[in-house]
Figure 1 (cartoon, helix red, strand yellow):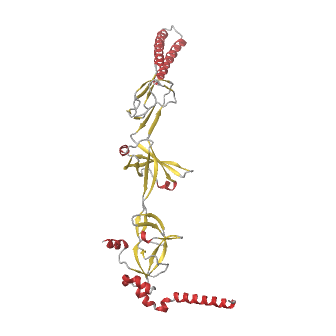
Figure 2 (cartoon, one colour):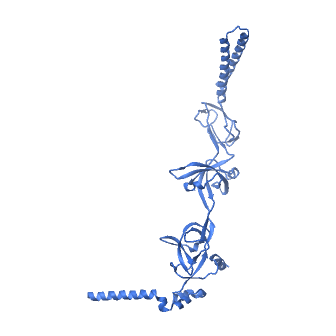
Length: 385
């Protein structure tokens, strides 16, 4: 085929394509726009699909819903560690042999109640000797005072007798302290844990002889993201659940907030005091991990039907009714609820209408015909009835 014929055929194809495009763009005026509009009128909703197929140039029939508002629910969920407000490992102050254990695991003990006795035979002897020395010193002081009253002793001798008595008193005090250290007492009221020692063991100041936990109150320590730092307050309510009783809710309140954010994890440490009765009923003990929920006051947000939301490469959006047409309104999805979605949008306000059915054929500025005389939720309820 010659070059001239090829050029001629190319121009012919281009002219035919242009003519087709012109006819498509001006179809309403060329083929009777008035009839086409009438064919898609709302009153002909029952046969709208067939008429659009015949004419296809009228408003798009759609179902709309009203943009409402609702309060968003926001909370932090974290895994925390249960703590006792007072929990201590009890150590002896001396090295000695255990002679008596005065507790068993799980016992409730009072403050200063004896827990362990150590061998104290040497200390008792030392205390007896100190008592004897003190008695002798007191007698010597009495004789010196009598002689001083008759000027038969020097002032220096009298002072020496007084010093001897004071030294004897201090020696008694030291011997008593050494003896007292052979009895290990509870530092505060609480519950004693399991101990690994038994009678006859040699213990040193690095040996844990008992553990005592104050279980009258329990706390939970957990971490929250730094973006919530300004919204946490002392006294804020929390709820918690333990794996031992996942069906039992444990109430509590924030009792302490750390003064700094962990710069590596970008988290803030928070402590909350748990309700002792519900925590005990759920089997919560110090060291256990529990799931903590920290709710925050909700904020009012726009709410649209889940059916109205569309997505493309530019993000999520809805079709907002604008007169007898529609306009695209970009949205940000905040929270999904049952059948509705809380959104943020600069293009929407409460009371606007959005399209929930008939979305596939819409484009920006397209004309529509609303088929529903009531909100989509009521229409759905009517259909269900």
